[in-house]
Length: 130
Image (cartoon, rainbow, N blue to C red; front, side):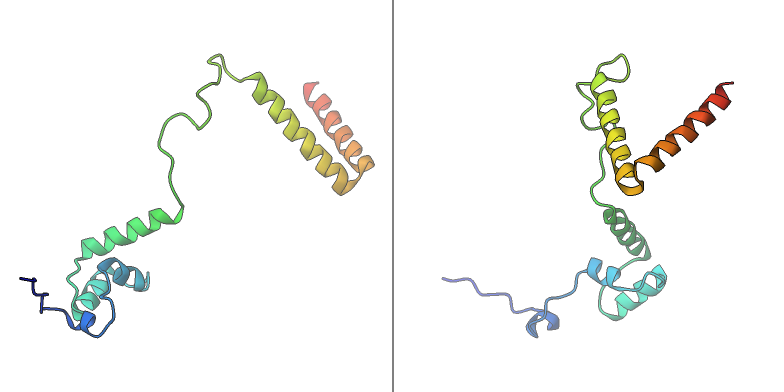
């Protein structure tokens, strides 16, 4: 014999609309509204939400905005780095970055202007070194 479907449906589902989740209700309220006020509005809407729940939902939503968080520990890609400090590959990579940045400056300001900048910096370094 086939089972009978449950006859007790809420008025929200019988009208065709999906019932709103507690989380969606909390996040739909203005951020300036206090947790107590959100809880009172939820009660009026037929949802049982505590102030602590409001704080938890808002905190979770705020933490998710920044995207996935990395686990603590070694930085990604550092497994093969030598234990004696920096690596030659890292130094070469940073030189390439510096060269690329220098090339950008030359393209932006022109060779004479960049040569003048380098001369100024060199003179300052000589002055500091004494």
